[in-house]
Length: 355
Image (cartoon, rainbow, N blue to C red; front, top):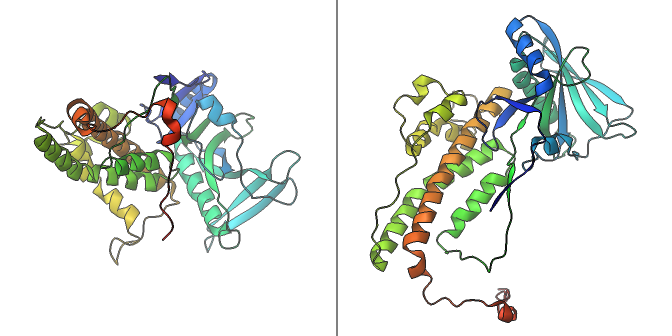
């Protein structure tokens, strides 16, 4: 049975309008929602501070309150309470950063960068790009697993963040038992593994590739299921590709010209092929620049497309899995013994001898 984790209350989702796990989202405390709305509507030049909270991974499970209070972990330290350094790109293109240590520790708590902008929403992609490029540059001498766990946006002089950007977590759990066990068909095992790989990765680029591999593998899987049905005497029409919820896609910011003509998940899969190509290949052609994995806008776009693609790829796979369980399961499991708990000593791993 599903078991929802407590969200902690008091939080509003600003972007996207509809939540999907593992997409990049902006949240605001209810107490600061009016401040954010007013700041965005005024649209005047302001000074913001963006704090990038670092970790060795991006948290993916739990409610928002849990995610925001969970301790981060990494191996980056500074001498003293704060280290101010710059990253120079040549000419007058340089940016200063403050690496601020945790209280009574040397480990970095966050990296702060000052952003001048008319709109809070523009600060996140700019800060993510700048901090990511700083972390990229550190890799030359400090080979550390460092990633941005979340971004906190502050108005100049404020003590609490105006809003925050983070990867939206999976906030539902599953409570098991009592039960005996489950059956895994060999031809479905690679798909099960691929789904778990897609869900657990903290990279939107790899998540998108996993989602693409999953959807790409559905056609041969459909052929397998169709042939099994014919052989086992259960030749039942297979489920159709999931229909697209255009309202969901619009809430994610997809434009009408992009959505024009899209009807099902296969259409979306085909139309987003440029994202797959950009993640797979360093250079799409000799005249084009490679996709910059640290660019804030690119990171944001990939997180949204990957979340939507994984959502529909999983829906398509789940409908096939239900079809198998309903029409083929009994036939496929004929001849299988029931492993009773009283005989569990008979059902242990026996690895083949090493070759």
